[in-house]
Length: 442
Ligand code: PA5
Image (cartoon, rainbow, N blue to C red; front, side):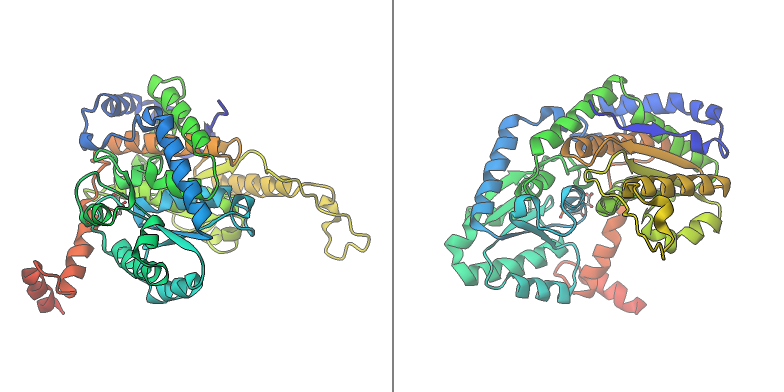
């Protein structure tokens, strides 16, 4: 197994090894709860053994559907929000060429339903006009407003262009096995469907068809992704790999020492959306009962020229977790220049990645010196296998960490409040009392 490594020496100027060790019994008990299902939210533990229990036949079926969509479509729009969008977006961005279309210049995967932007949707409609496109609509509940609006609009466009029968061949729905408006519509229209199991919550669903189908359409190897996750699952649950445990213990020890904000830092622009996925995973899992580390993310070195000042010199309530990718896939060296007007000849001949790594190391030392504790997670490469391992690593650490914090990491009661107000303001049938109450506040 290409191993993910967690290094936490950079926190020792703030907390001691003994502070981390002291949390070991709580960590062990948290892991046991995940394995034997005795903790809060234990009806949402389907993700714990999801990689090892995913049959190869399901992956083959998803690959076959992806191939059909690719045959029929130049563009596939994946519609979903939160956990029904961020994992696929994170993996596709991490694996893709920054400028070309997806692998082999194949079918492009775009995303919608992750906002209520009128201009965004109108511009997407313009972009799709006259193109061969398909839709993967993803909603576990099948009732979420943002994806439902996007789906209604794009489904209408597709049906107008091709007629209902042809449109239905280009629509795949991923939703609950039985419940929800999307399930009923899929049954009526005869869409190809995949199921999100009841016991897999949205933000833990990237390794289910929710993430796998868009990733497969983009041309990436979902067998390798699941293999990486399954290997990490086996190593974490057996105790053979303590990376997730070390991360969970260290961040909780820092939190107890007053470090309330964790910044996930990358030095590779392809990892921007991995930070977005991670923010949802940890924010929705831990931010409850008026507790929880606030998850933030920056992209370096870009953000060293904006947020760098705050991190170096602002309030000392933060710590950093750096994801470092051991090696760049491509090799590019800085050329020698006779005139040397830019003064760069001192690094001529060096690889760009070597310069990046020195920026990373220099920043790490400066931040530790400045009172920002630092954890480093080393990823061997940006490959499907390694990303699968990293996803499972973060999911397992999140479950352990949430139980150490003593919250239910698998619910999200707080996200209902804005929905209630929005429905009341939009006068949704059934919300009459709420409409009256909210009007009194305006
Ligand atoms: O993690 C979660 O459960 C949420 O963020 C959901 O993923 C998000 O709200 C989308 O829900 P649904 O898939 O039901 O449309």
